[in-house]
Image 1 (cartoon, rainbow, N blue to C red):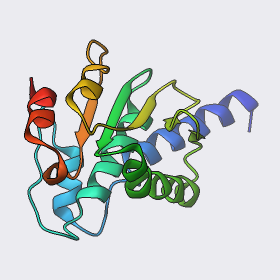
Image 2 (cartoon, rainbow, N blue to C red):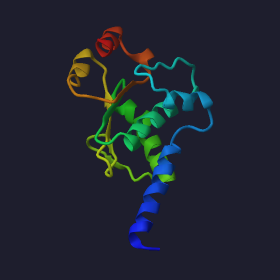
Image 3 (cartoon, rainbow, N blue to C red):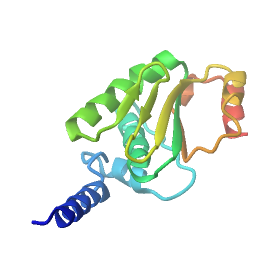
Image 4 (spheres, helix red, strand yellow):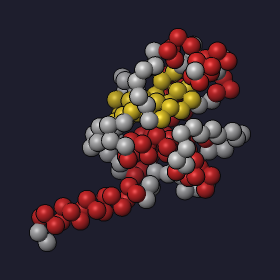
Length: 159
């Protein structure tokens, strides 16, 4: 097969793999529906072990893979809790599916080197911390474990 034809076949195969969204949770149809839901605002209200974290992980990876040059944010109460909840899960998913994502430990940022998309993990235990992130354009912002946030911090997120 000619080299240029082989390259086109490989690109099409990669396109089909990404279109299938292998990172989207397959175990819970509700999680998959959450990831694929096109609405601008989404809320998950469910109990422990309801799949919120896995759904959020899949949703952020979806943006990393499908939205070039995009930036998304994941907030937990502290940076430590953000890393405990999401960081290692993201690394395991990346390794299992061979997504080719890069993990910047100091910045706590996941990057897709092929398309320039970035996903930051942050802690936000005070309203003034949330204010630091105003003004930038984010394709997705997830606020996880909201039951632990003080009301004024949540109001700052919404406002």
